[in-house]
Image (cartoon, rainbow, N blue to C red; front, side, top):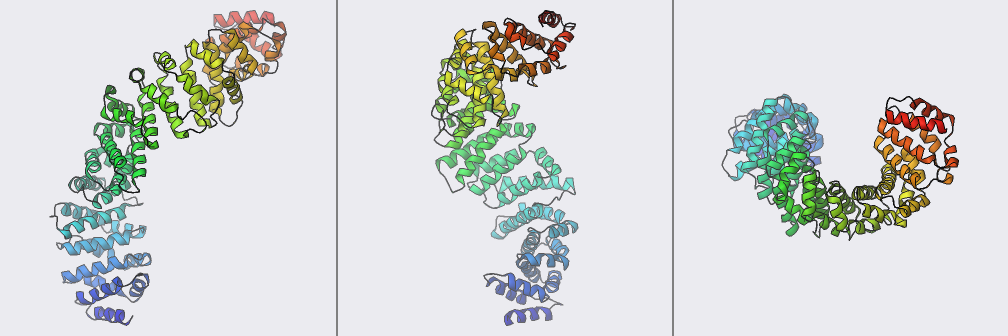
Amino acid sequence: MEELTASLEKLRVSSDNPSPEPIDELLNHIHKQEDTTEVCEDLVAGGILPLVASALQGSSVEAQAKGAELIAELAKVESCRLECVTNGLVPKLVEKMASTSTGVALQACRALGNICYEHDGGRVSVMESGGANQLLGLLQRAANLPNSSEDHQLRLVSTGFLLNLLNSYDTVQDQSMEAELVDVLCQYLDKFAEDEDIPTHVLLSLTCMADTEVGRSLVVTRDITPQLVKVLRINESAEVTETALELITNIAETESVKTQVAKGGICEAVVEVVRRHRNSPSSDLSPPIIKTATDLIVLILVGDESMTIVYNNGSGPVYQELVEWLTSDLEDLQIAGALAMGNFARSDAHCIHMVQSGIAEKLLKVLSSHNNGEGDIRLQHALLSALRNLSIARQNKPDLVKQGALDVLLPMATSIETFPVVFKLLATLRMIIDGQAEAALKVGSNGEVIKRLVGWCGTVDHPGVQGESSRLLAWTIKNCDGDSSVITSLVTAGCVAPLVLMLGSEHAVMVNEAALALVLIFAKEVKKDMVENTKLTEVLPFVLNNPNLPAEILANVMSMMTALSANEEAFELLKNEAIKAAIEKHASHENDQVKTLATALKEKV
């Protein structure tokens, strides 16, 4: 403590023309401490800040550099940062960033960077003192300095200061200045792409800018794709790679940016990153880097134009690599490959080509190892999403049936309990059996599957599963070629009640599907006990009085009632006042088919 006091007194005595020696002594004393908090707080309490302010303004360049360095050490302590601001050091340090001495500019940058670290008061003071423009000028100068150790350090410190200034603080004040800043940061990525620390500072700074609306617009407009591709390809630091991937993920939210990065070769560079970290894991960061990279590719493929660019008529190198991922021994790659296939399968042309080239077979082969309750849930969901999309194209349906899709999918219906997976499974089955009598018969004749479907029709835990179960029952009836044994087994399993509830859906397409399925059931056989324990008498008035229901669907509902009238006991259940009133109203409907059906029903009730 005596040594500290003596050095402080020396500095006080020479305050008119500060010497670097006492400052150096104080720095040495600080550096000797394991925990510098106490000594720094003691120095601030002892009046050090006005003394170093004098050193900054003195004639000795060495004293200026040492003074700024001392402030940088003091500002490492959280409690000292505000004192640095209130003692007016920030404007003086901002001024010194313009010094022709690299050492002075470097230490001034260090000091300001530390003052701004997690300290909004410091950031505000720097901005109000013109620090942003001064820093921009310094970054521009430093970019063109030689590659000496000191010049490299200046670039490292100045980019670090920029990061601390931008982090969690909205600095948008001068858009033209920020546009210049983006240009400078791109220059840094171009020139120092192989460095370990400078790209990290630059990429994080760009991320901070992209967190503001104006900053994001500037980053996107400038198109930093070439620089990002360069960094991903040549920088071997796991930290830099992860930071670059996170920045791209941040800005790739809009369709235009997805297209921009797809055209610019980001996907190819990201695939290289995955390959590098898969084949030669460099650190504990390799697994999260692979996960971030694969998630990014899937995100880019969400865009219609970007997906088309990467697909490139099935010959795109990234597309072909993603197909290979389906058989990878890395779970994240398999899942990403499956999700990517689902994204590519968003047009009939793509779907048809993909099935013809064997993609569906690959997906089914992978799924066959996970088609039970023990299978990986994320992979199941991704594979089913892709298969569902592929099965939408009418031309693909018979091919999928021939490739054994039902042999893989139906066991899942009796073993999977996870509702999001069940939802995708049911939607996939519904798509595949559309127009495929053989497939519908296979579903309808599987008693265990039908039992599960009827059970899921009553679930309240997942409305999507409830709706898809009812729809799959309806589509099975519609597509089974009127097979009596299938329809009878469906009725016996209790499918009429959920179809009646589906009739009351708010979605017109589901109302229509339910009505048609019930018409087909009642056309085969009508018994009172088929409908008496359903909610048909409650649902029908709601449906018949729905003003938004298209006339052709209303006609199908009435056709269902007409089919039901074949059994007098069953039809007697419909003879309540609400249903009678609705039929009476529709007897004068403007649609001829509705009017005819309603008139005939009116006579019967």
